[in-house]
Image 1 (cartoon, each protein chain N blue to C red):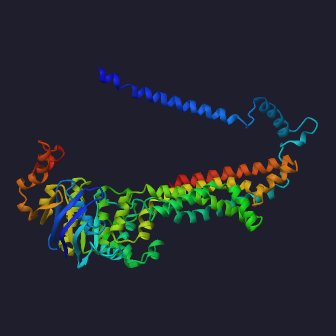
Image 2 (image 1 turned 60 degrees about the vertical axis):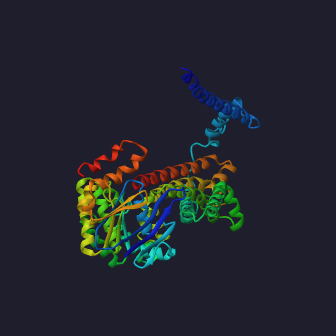
Image 3 (image 1 turned 90 degrees about the vertical axis):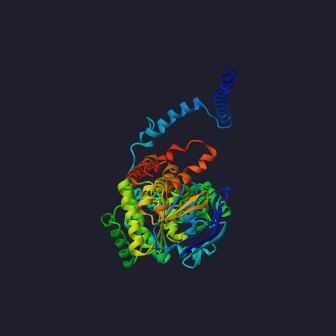
Length: 264
Length: 271
């Protein structure tokens, strides 16, 4: 359902984020994007939901060419794509339920959302999404009073409330402790396998990649360097992925990234 | 060694720089004395005169400000309430007008730089025109009474509030905006659900703060015929009815204290 054909993206400051990416991603496998910081993972995610327009190339989601769609069409397409963020990005001063209702905004007339008169169906849908992620008890609590793991689960509920066909998770567990990470990744995998929603996640923790991914796409300097089952992700592959580009400029690997390979 | 000798001048330069600022300020003060008739003897003599004005002379002890004469007290209180009402409407109208303008006057939400510059310059003009000057204009336009006073307060306050709101919009967390955009929400919904919740504390506290200062401003607008207690300030002073004037001033002070106190309590609770 998602097709990328020869996608290139160069930012206004000259940074070449993506070079000739061609991919096809569907709902049948939990897909994980890996790669060193600056490899273009976040850019790829933002191109998929139209927050960033690729410089060249074709991106098709559910038959809509989002890379060239009109603004109105992009807004309509985004309704089908839920997004989960590294920093959760909940609206802090709203309650958990109101945050989940944000997932329904694009389905209601503007006047209704402006006076915050949500329909009963929307409220039921939002509440069900909170129940799904185990946060129903916190529905009336302000988002900034919740812990990181709780906030991320509300973030997932917000994405679910859109009844999406695709969920993009941009480093969903980078800011979470191990237990919360497990909950969040478990939820995302469950959503993918039970609801038939395609999930694409950016991950830095290779342990989590091996545990949850069914398909791994590795990016390095804006290009796909690996695409396959996590079993094929050998130490040689990951070492090349995370350290090779540094070898060119500096002899010793950056120590801040070594913990990733401890169990590799 | 030579390198170390070359480095320190930077510190010395900074000292010269601050000294220059002090010199500049002294020069400014000196310049400001010309034509302003600053005079210490005149001030001392004035203090003695003010004493007579406040407490009356030996021959006519009731010619001063004390004791205050509250025979028309109810009228003064009534007029003070009218003044507060003017401040309420002036502030509310301004807050309503300021919100949409602030979107155009914030760098991150303005549709383009031209609109942003135009909005900012309009706000500069609104803030530049003092309530008193605006009241003179509106009295000429719509006639005497509290209504031109309300308009004067509203116009000036719009300029102040829209700038403060715009500055709050400019520092909102972009992550929250991105999340709402990613859900497919349109720009209006992004404002109502991502930006507005973030600026609510500023909107509430700044609007209340402006309400307090509008009560003070409104209490002198009567001087130019724009309604409220200000009329009685001029009336009693011009007829040398100083004991009544002091009653009027006491009513104003008590009202301002009360409004400041209540408003500060609400602001503390809401933010």
